[in-house]
Length: 300
Ligand code: ATP
Ligand code: ZN
Image 1: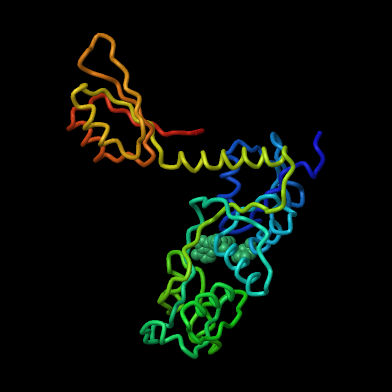
Image 2 (image 1 turned 30 degrees about the horizontal axis):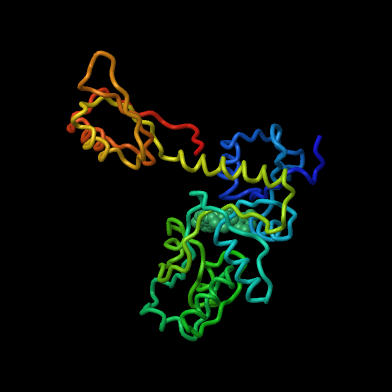
């Protein structure tokens, strides 16, 4: 039985936009989880990996301070933490590993619909309400804009109506919240999605091996996203044309067909979705008996 220190701890958002996706992704890596009574920890039943359920804003610090080995959090939160630490003269003690293809949003500056926006000049000597003071300050400095960030911890979009700011700088995904508040996007500062971060503290060999294993599985789960396994028959003479039509596939398997010297069977993993048009083009190139299957797991 391993001690608590030997178990991998992953910081995950407790309740919010990233929660279900983060847990689902780890479950698709083969992790079987049980929630503690107080709902603060999910214990890994079949692997020495536990999830700490916390506020997303706390995740970079938990990983940076080596309380957790890994964290799943929005790039917006990671970059904000990194910049605010840099602006205070310290350095983030975590590294970003890879993007997880969910939680997409962008950090944008938005102006009241009635305001005339004519580029960076329009921001000069204004107040911009935001929860992302680090990222906003970085943008203003890099673009030599003299504007004042005003910190709002939430409900940033009402700041102009309250007369507390001229613009806002906040996360946007569909833009419907901005629209409902009479605001329109004028500048995009950062494109964001959920990422995995890892502590910079050295791990024991066993822990590092387990972290590597879980990261490899995560990469595998992401790779199968949209991947399809395609099987078809084709005349040998059409092989080159058909290979060129297979979307995102590297080396298809080509097999002879019993009792038919002119035709072969082709199997390939396509790293993109296979659309009806592709199937129709393959058929037009001579393919027959086309079959497209979903891919569940993949290990390079
Ligand atoms: P917590 O209580 O954990 O602090 P929160 O209110 O800060 O929660 P959520 O609103 O759940 O956080 O958002 C979590 C993350 O989801 C954001 O940091 C961002 O990376 C991502 N996200 C995706 N789309 C949006 C959006 N439209 N607005 C806000 N965040 C979004
Ligand atoms: Zn938060």
